[in-house]
Image 1 (cartoon, rainbow, N blue to C red):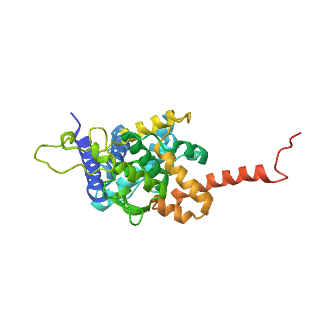
Image 2: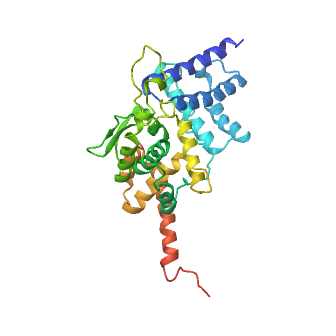
Image 3: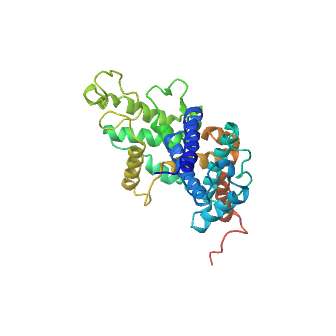
Length: 316
């Protein structure tokens, strides 16, 4: 049985998570990540004998990431956890549950930023080459083309409905992080692939296949459906993409974000317009988009090494 102070600490965390879900409408995965990170903060508070969040001192808050680092947690994970702690204390300040935010200004240990993995244009051309005419191949081809054409997140693709696409304007309305909507352009080849899929989609979405209660007569409105005629899950999309990566001989796992990263880096290489890429990706902070400038620099460095007379290696 939890101690009274444990129940109080957990109760305020629960209120915070409920507020995130209700007011900011964050995804279930994001809420789960906050819950997991704050569970470690609760354990830390219990170890220190803290009975109320207002009693956690700045000194103790500074010791928290140090302890996590000693236990082998990566700098990236500690940074994420500190972000959750700061957000929680901002909530407590508004609710009158604390007078200061002890985590304000505390930095995580520095860590080397990993550059996002991308596919080359040749790899993408091979991957996106027209598949056979089976209904599942048409569906998968449409998913791959749309991923690369529009730079969608996996959750955004999975949540699309059959009415999300405006074929007159060649664009879709996407609901991204924080329930924010944005309009995304769809390329010519993606439009063609989507059109081909939608002419066959009805073969899977049949009344006898709808996994819905009998008193619910609403048809399935998901853009991409599975063999049972219901919305294709995030895991289902990941599985199908990896199946195509194997079939095409890519020699590595194909994470959906690789298509999003490839979209961003290829657009930036061609245009050099970082702000446009930020808008297309739906990044609220351009700092999140700037990682692609490193990829663009790598590309330019390769071009320089291969093209400049003073940079080329001697063939002797």
